[in-house]
Amino acid sequence: MPLLPAIGFETPIVLAALAALPLLWWLMRATPPAPRRLAFPFIRLVMDEAATEETPARTPWWLMALRLALAAALILAAAGPVLNPQRLAPLDRPLLLVIDDGWASAPGWQAMLRTARNAIARADAGRQPIGLLTTAARTGPARLDMESPEEAARRLEALAPQPWETDRSATLEALADLDPGAPRRILWLTDGLAGTDGTAFGRALAELGDLAIAEPGAEALPFALGRVRIEPGHVVVPVQRPGGEAVRAEAAVIGRNGEVLGAGAAAFEAGATEAEARIALPVEVQDDILLVRLTSRASAGATALIDDASRFKRVGLAETGKGSQPLLSPDHYLAAALADLAHVEAAPLEALLARPPGLILLDDSVGLLPETRAALTAFLEGGGMVVRFAGPTLAKGDDTLVPAPLRRGGRTLGGALDWTEPQGLQAFDAASPFAGLPIPEDVVVRRQVLAQSEGEPGVENWARLADGTPLVTARNIGKGLLVLFHVSATPGWSDLPLSGLFQGMLGRLVALAAGSGSGSGPDGAGETLAGRLAAGGAALAPRFALDG
Image (tube, rainbow, N blue to C red; front, side, top):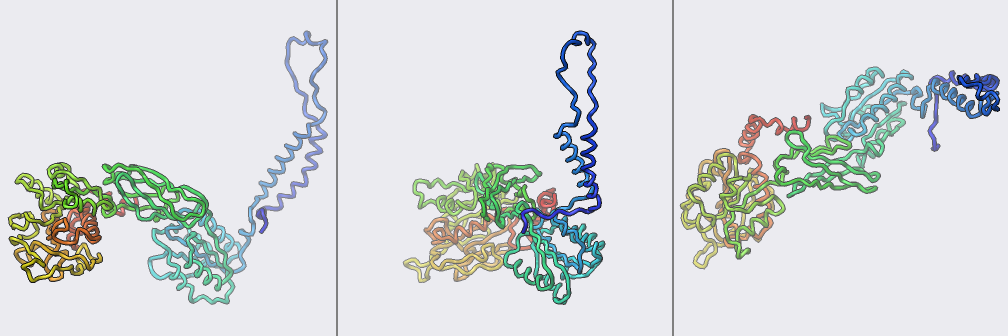
């Protein structure tokens, strides 16, 4: 390949004017410039002085060279120079134009359009039909129709990058009826994410005709966001790319009103495919995050809508006052399980209710005064979520702030005077928020509180022991949700607080606390979302958030 691309001219006949440059040089050389005139009234004062400046008889050589260069440049410009002229040569056979129009094509879309327009112009000059196919079509099976260059040009201008991936296998189905032996030229405008699928796709295209592949430049390769993580004081933005030179990917955190809450950059080293941006953001404003987007090389893949499940939420932990023995305190086990899942605020229950988070964890040892109970009920009815843990107080059966009335005394499994054995856990039902969590075999329950009767209206059983008795129950109270673990938050009643399952269950509850309702069924979730949108939250609708 030559170091410099070829240069052609659209009107080469104009270049004949270059032959007149020697004549122009002779005229400028033979005709001296006009003498300069200086008006000076005191001529008599200098009549006897010798002249110190003379007018040259001929034009200086450097001025002649400059004038000749300008004349040559004007002639070349009038001839219409074209870089790499073969791209405008008329085509001698039909053209198959394949365009990747998935999300990854957005950064280099304008360059792809220019290349496609040049290809259509060549087909038009050679009066050849064109078959235009896109690889991200989702309106039905891909279909190939040969059409005139004018029709193809109109279709091309109507195209735009789609917010989903390409489906090249569907494109190949549309090409299955083509005769491999028929003469044709194929131009594939790829988005730069060919990979293994693209290699197979390219081989299939090459079997159908003379294939040319146009790839985006390094400045147009796409960026893609990984799963954005919101941590206390930071927003972590993972960014991916196909590869390339060292570059920075600028990222911005956008609030619910469209304001920029924070900005940062992920620095890619040469050849690296992954980088990460850490954007400092106070916990107080993290609830206002609507989306995170890359401001450089924007595309659908470079925009992440932050839903409630992605937020690093505020979780209130009602202090029990048992801090002198951490391993005996429920605060220790709850805070440790939530350390990587939420921003835990440990404070007296009254202080938490004064500035309520979305979720409050309440151990059995936290006493509920009448006024505190009333405030907690109002918090639930307003859409909050309370997770309670059993203990000696609830085992008395007098507390009414539970999903279902409890039996007195509870149940002891595997005691010295009890013939029953400690119970393991059943697999979680598909309707349970804990569905899919693996259950360790060594987690057993030695004591639990029981409801007075099974099948209480409105009570949902989210987890059960091996004998079918409840481990976790829940009930809607107003717009909120009350959840009860029928065991304690310490290892005294079960091994659950010592297991990874405990962290997984609390993580699911933290994600569930984002909504106003239980979210355990489609009806409740739908009513909650509809209610939030009806309340004036246009920014909460994903279509508004991404299109705005």
